[in-house]
Length: 267
Image 1 (cartoon, helix red, strand yellow):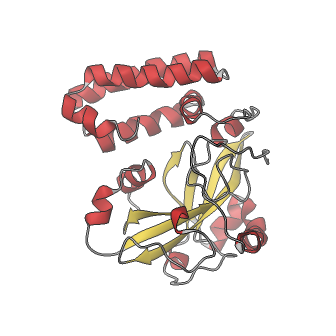
Image 2: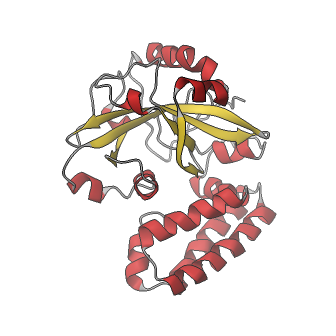
């Protein structure tokens, strides 16, 4: 399934270089056979971590991550999401082990296309890094992963090299992508899409906010209540935006100020 890309002027887009089209063509040619998940398993890829609302699930080939110079035709990360009841390849990612927070120069993409994870692939690291909470990783010693996404099988309104693809919640539900993407509406729609969206948001709140057990119990109730609201409001962009903002207003009322301060980075 391919969606028509639209440009969003409200947010900075990751601009491709003159060599990017050739790079993308090689990535598509190299992964066409891996659109079948069983072919990906046979090739050595395995699912790791949660299903991200704006990314899908990461399937990782650890041997390919260890390459100092990635091959565009052999990305070490494949990203799958369930579309129309079928696990579907929507994008790829390239990961390079580095010892600093300087972007690799091994692919023809701008430095702004890269972001960083700690050197592990454990779930909370993925949650925090993909939510933009990466300050701890920049100050940590030792190797870390520089990661760059390429949305070669599902068009991304924010650009083919943007980290998140907020067309994905619409594609999961079989909806047309609006002419201008609202990230707040798309995130509410991801919550509405199913229990995976609810579990992801709960895990993100737990990993980033570090609430107490009592606070977490109240937060689960908040998330469940607004999930039901989001389902009723879809696909209205205005109503979904209001639902997403109201969710965080309610989150603020049930946690201590220090928890809310940590959560403001991901609201």
